[in-house]
Amino acid sequence: MTRVPPAPAPAPAIGRVIGLRLRPLLLGAALPLLSGCAALTALGDATEPLDVYEVQAPSDIRPARASLPRDVIVELPTTSGALETDRIMIRPTRLAAAYLPEARWGEAAPVMVQTVLTRTLDATGAFRYVGRRPLGPSGDFAIVTELLAFEALAPEGSDGARVEVRMVSRILREDGVRVLSTRSFEASDSAASLEAGEIVEAFDRATDRVARDFAEWVLTTLDAPRPASGL
Image: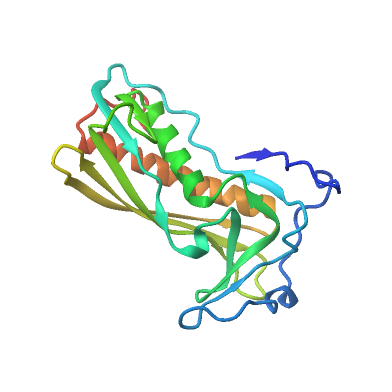
């Protein structure tokens, strides 16, 4: 997990305490109800500078000894509107979506997940090229992903939170657009408190496990060489 300095703003943000606890009164500022019983709550003042965080791809993957002459494209994950943001989602209930106050991701959650998946797969060295876009008209294989959950669950009155990362991915052969394999991935981790730093660390650990499982699945499906130390 790397903390990125916030963008310049009139008021200093770096030296400020970032671990504000969620308070019930903040959750009372919900916007009008969305579909069903779900409510979307923006915690904190959107005009305030926010501390910026990002999760990282695993750093201990050794490259494979050989690579296949194949190009693999990791498409931008699709997701629900509540996750299509750079705010850090924390749910007080399963049917309500809120955002952690005074903190945000360095980029929108789907873009950040795409970055982690791409870098993890590229670090294996198992393919000629791994990227977000093909070098030519199309790549040999494309991986499409739906991000189902990238959130922390913190029921009212709890001292900590449980982070959940869930997604489903499909490997497509560009020639003929055939689905070769589909797999779901999920991981969870716990934060002992509601401080932003601890919650982001839990996100980082859960994302790390999902990224490793994702890369192993891609290598197995495409019969690619494995790094000597595994994933």
